[in-house]
Length: 474
Ligand code: C2O
Ligand code: CU
Image 1 (cartoon, rainbow, N blue to C red):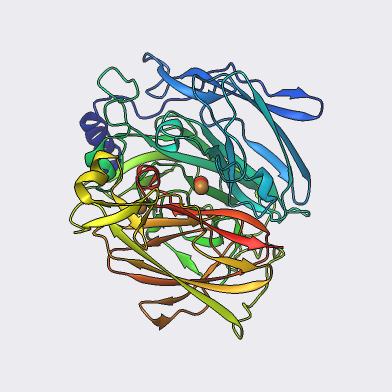
Image 2 (image 1 turned 135 degrees about the horizontal axis):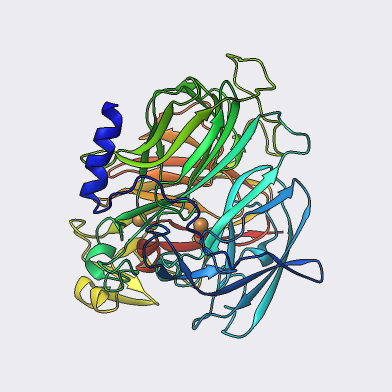
């Protein structure tokens, strides 16, 4: 009861009177198929982000919707997606977290040419790891992802782990203006670029404002959470439910344990939770985001009579391992440093941009405010060049005043040291939040040949300097 009153309070703050908005997705998005390809048409569309009874928001979409169609494949299955560009800009698709073929990684200027308006590109790759992944545009991401060009990619285990229900929540925070349209002035805004990035003001789950879901009493629930926000690190609380983390960034994770508390998901990160649905039919549990002064409810889970197949268990379900080594070979390691500099209150004086040394005034003039090792954005030479199979440690050293979710393409890594103290049992990740003044040492086996991007996943940071690459030679 109290909870309901509180909710109405926050709904009023957000300028809206309703609590749930079922079915706000534009229904135009039937999945197209062509020569065995799933067709993803990148095109302008409309979404009822604010609710069914409100004017829709003009977005950029895949197949008319945001999130785009959920792509579900089996582990090791061949994925065939045809991107058809009906946008007014070039675009590509990147398969975030997939340790797949470099030529299919979707990074314009590094692994492929951007796909111009009117053209198409066929992505064909295998998904080696079962887990929760996502896809998004990798061209002008700070604009294209902000306008809605992303979706979930679920790779199913070869044998079902046996949950009663598999629920996916793709979370975004849109920045809408007073008319409920994409806030244009803040796209590429220098002030936000040099601070924490472009934060949204309108949270959605699966493209809907505060949708309601039904779960069955005593059910064993697999909840997959994906943070698609441009910049926001989500701090999530799921009522007082006990949730066990069973996968992180698409990789099974044990030793993490159960929590009734905060789940922190930086931009681009994912988590899979194993939940025993606690409570009686008629009760409702809320997923709240608590990074601001007051909790913002994102969605509600209504408990109904259920027919749980599994007995209530205390032990979390162990997902089958993906083909990653249990332990990293740390005897013959190459070590590289990545010093992150710049941004507001960072005191960066100068850096090299496109081969030219520039002072901060010139850099700001060029729309660039961040640097890795004194280099702004893409360089001709990679940050490092290693042979296939080499174990690599990268020391991510944050000398800025801001946290940065650092994302490595084509590989998963483990944090092995934080501020020079050893970290044991870290999960495999593809995106790690490096907080201000932190030094985070990540280790991985460079087993995937090609040119791989390494960048901050605050998308306006990536566009203003925090973007580099490394090379793995065959
Ligand atoms: Cu999710 Cu290089 O991106
Ligand atoms: Cu950043």
